[in-house]
Length: 585
Image 1 (cartoon, rainbow, N blue to C red):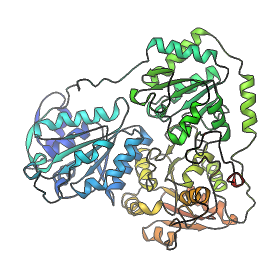
Image 2: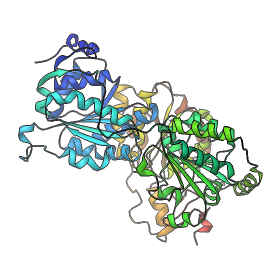
Image 3: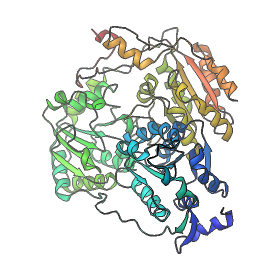
Image 4: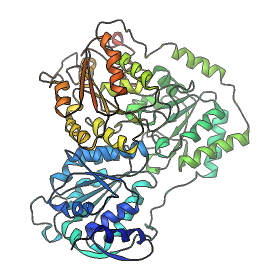
């Protein structure tokens, strides 16, 4: 039995009374109740009842991608750019397995997502049926939680729990596995009840004693330093952070996942720390006497060798909503579990009460000496186009007002180094998993989430080919994004590590059969451009940015020998940076 749109409109009153719906219609009703506008997916036999239900209404719009991985990344990009839940829909078997990389990408970066996975009928479970796949077992290590629905009566509560879990506490992806027979079965739908999950409590403010201890340590510090992680962005705490930095005047570093949490143009922002961070950011991280870590993980790509990091005596204060992240890799002296939107103002208020402002002149003098090394400077006098110069020019043309969706590789690090993101959620990239191919589907999600913004994909000739089929999705739905593709005819970051660590033995990091990207973009119905020289660059960049009614693909040909500097070799410490080619040894 189908439900027409009039019957589905009853969902608007489902908060006050029960109605009877098919399982598939319950899913659509729950999406409407959660305010979901877009779902990214790919149909298949097990999921067809849901697609049938979607057809009966126009509140929730389905975006047909060309691969399930693209669906997950697009939902992820929507969530990263808006702070709302991204929703993806996949079918059984290969539909679920194709989604794994996207789920893991969101999991590593704590992105709120709900993934609805249709599966084979319950009567066939364990029979090695066509497209049978243990979605729960496969996704358990890479989700915040997952559910298998066993009765249609459970479905409304499971869906409500899924959205609650995805967004509360430390966010993350939640998978809901729904057998096809349950999608077709009928049951009561009521969606107004509050969610109660035994033993699941999300932290709020920090413990007053720990707040006081942290404030006293910061007030005594002669070399304080703020280490900002992606948790500040996820918590929507950027304004609270700026108030704290304005009050204290402490030098600050923002990780790859936190760019824009404090404007990159702010003099107190030392840039990004870690493997490809700035010299001043890493030296300050190593030599500070009090380190305030906000929503960060002390990732290996940030602190380098943990033994080397621990060799310097410092007081570490770590604030995180997830207690399992504290003292996981680095011993913490003052742990604070809490929501950063609450904890940062608590620290601000306590430091105002103490009313101590240190004289940080000597500390800033030292930092200015590190800054004087100008570790991001480069020679722009070469005949070939320099990717750093291209990105800086693009930044000026956009006035730092675009959303930049990066793939993974050298281009990702160049963009992170040279864009000065003025606010959060303007930099969309895969940090924890480092997933190639995310850039274009990220941009699809971000553009639908923020249609008023220019959305630019920064990618490379290797990364773009992993999800390039989503150019078809852009055409079908009129999602006009800008693609800047650096073509160095190689897997640039792999090639660089082979150059540095493997004596230039470039095993399978080259590309000898690249497509004509201009013709390929045109074949998908878009504008294709290529530049190889300086004199054509400005016009091409302006066409890229100023064309509003078409997707534009700009290929920029660069030298395969271009490197990302600075760099820290794997296993080395923050003070063991390679600033340029001559430091390799």
